[in-house]
Length: 298
Image (tube, rainbow, N blue to C red):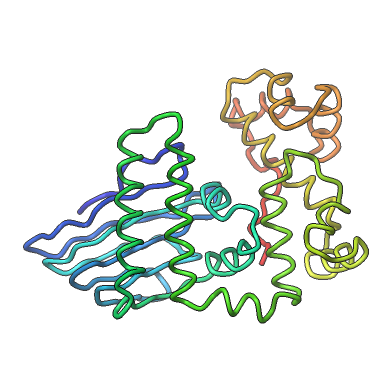
């Protein structure tokens, strides 16, 4: 039984599926602290993914994308070739970016689907070439590798969007509630460290401040300001837990000009001081204080 390769910066795994004389299996799990997507691209042969709730089978050339998945495994038949990967939201945010097409990409990656690449020779070649380039960067693991991986992943995602028709589906509902929330989510992921005011998010979405406020409170039960604060607090909590930065350094890395302001913000949002949170996590006494995630966003 094979396992997925080592991750780069803990946010993407990718490896080749080489031809074998027997059936092969790869187990996969959803990380506890981040939404993850499973990616399977078959260039020859057949295979699929099996989870607790559903089996997904496909024949090459084809792609399987699981926008949400539980523990399970990928199984490929003898002679099958292709790629298998696992990508978390941090890398997807980098790849999706802040562009006119970003809403369409976000609409696509949050869903599960299968794509046949039969008859899509040019697009299939672009996808395979980009996946090879990602593997090369993962092996090199240089300072600029993360940037290049995100760029090549964007090519893969846009190619998939063109084949799937997700761009058209997103545009049809562009003014709909779900599409606006997806656009807001992507903007928050891109800009929360810059401390954008809510009105700037609304302007970027081409809607009024009042409409964004009403949409978030009605659909998510929180104001836009509270959602942005939750995202910033979650990032602060993760860095307090995982990094060796001082609280002063961490506050600057999150866009705060004054460490005292950061400490006040973190305590107001989570009920704990940054130092108190770090000590409690270090003791592993209670991890339930971790700030809320965006897992419940559409």
